[in-house]
Picture 1: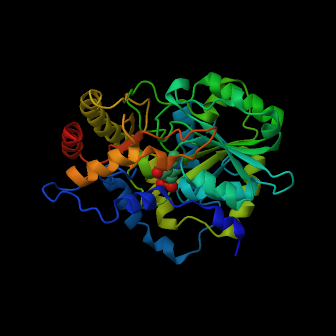
Picture 2: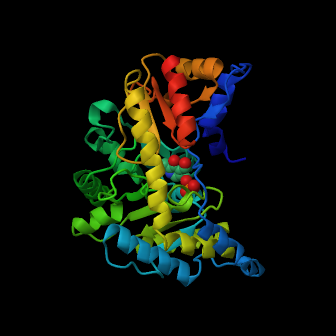
Length: 392
Ligand SMILES: Cc1ncc(COP(=O)(O)O)c(C=O)c1O
């Protein structure tokens, strides 16, 4: 077997199950789960209808590049959303089956497993796929701790020259999971300049781009930042998804867009990998990308929950309103695992210990004594969970 498989860590939810093993949650309370970032709002009818009306497509093999109509809908959405000129639908956009598989597969296509060992830079805490992707591509992850002290930013100034020279891929997540931080234009400028100097590819994970709180001020995107800085999209690829935007985590639909040269090779990789999108899902995705009303409605529901819950929790845990995304990332004052365990045992509320989302790097685990609360449940459930947390 591939020895790199042995480097894969247990997934955070597995570690949570291990933490709770043998513990019986207080039966006086109905369970409330805030640990998983799985959208729970209703899937819009227009997406369900487009899916069921296009089942005839199951009679054909889809192409890896997807139908032009889907790439056109994605291109139009990107232009509207990021105020940039239309991308070339034949070269600069590929539909993917959710951003997760694409973020993983991308490293396999990008990394040149040469000596000295290639490096993949990742935020820390981070979406676990980045690390697994790096290991299986034969690379070494290099973690940049994102902490309140640096406003949850990745501090590239601290990366040694020898590491930058070996870096082939950098994962960035804006809006960030778990912090909800949005990268500024200046932060993008620095990453672009480093990419120019050291030649690494940038994988910009934007799966939370549509969950924000100020309708007039959507998060800056990576392609948008490049455009504003007068750059082209060389070595830059964004990863976007319908899962959170349109409440369809089960549909598995997203896209990658950016550097045509990189995507030409990624398409080749994907052709062999065999990950074309189901034709009915392509049709439903067109409907989803073409509609913004359901997305605004979705945001309203999240905004209501964050407005209600955050000020109450602030009395007990160090937590602020995120820039975007649907997580509260709070400092607990006691060990995060103990916090999660007590809350589960005594009040039947499940939250994710922050240390499970991070690795020890540069002497610390930057997720330690943090917890992540995903406000995906209903407003009532989120309020009920908040009152239990306050009591705990
Ligand atoms: C940061 C981040 N990126 C990517 C994903 C993958 O989402 P999907 O594959 O549904 O697009 C997730 C899912 O929770 C995530 O948190």
